[in-house]
Image 1 (cartoon, rainbow, N blue to C red):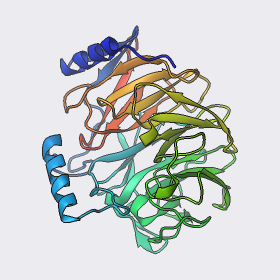
Image 2: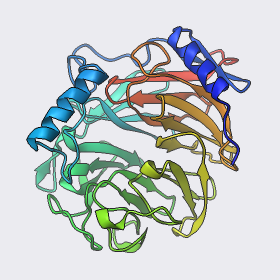
Image 3: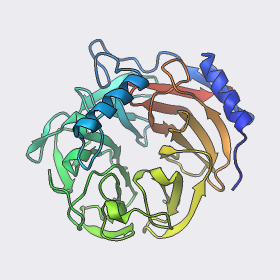
Length: 360
């Protein structure tokens, strides 16, 4: 596997640290669109106040671990604020799954807030935004919210005022066909089949039909911490999913620091590796381009990369809260015009980037 040069990555980091509006790596350039999106007064992602800086957060987490105060279920640290993930529909509407008062916020490409919701009671339980871990939108506009720590995924109609379906049993974790254990990611295929990464508690990827009926799973065994593995079709925290035009599934194997690729029936094909720690991945809705985009927790970066071999085509970002910087970059999508939207958890914001040649 070809490795990206350290000098290239260092240069991308220096550009970001300098606060420039233009970022570049390996011959491709993107520029930051300032002040995107426009949030109405009193609206925010996550917390009203900014969270503490990384060193203070780690000290607090270490103190909680020492006291045995582990939240999130399954030994996870307490939940983080901000944005947990992004999705985009066929009309280029950007869905922001966040841990604020409105768990789902929908924007157009100009940054205007079109709709906000997901804060209702569904199937007998109100969504806890602190427990949300991203979500998805299908080809009919229905919205899926992953309420990770409740071990369930709820499907809502496009206006998010009607409950349609649930995968998983509310507040019950398990390893069988009807239960989940801290699910992390979702993809919805054109025929309505659903792929779920049951990642934090179990180490498996699951295929369901459009009615939520279990079809098959890929993992070392039944699921659970003991099922961690490094071979093909094995996982250490399967996280999020991208889909191409042939509906191949590019699944983030987060702690193995790789992408595992399957066909639409969850048959293993191959893997991609590079100098990265992927947290999210996205391919445009067209899915015909030979590249995808990645939110990379290693040094807090965004990559445009080749779907064929994992070669990095553009890289930008560094740890921080300035322009072109990220603090736990955890969500990424690209629209039909090639604009890239990257969201960070502790940064509690989205940044939009367009090709440098774009007039937008």
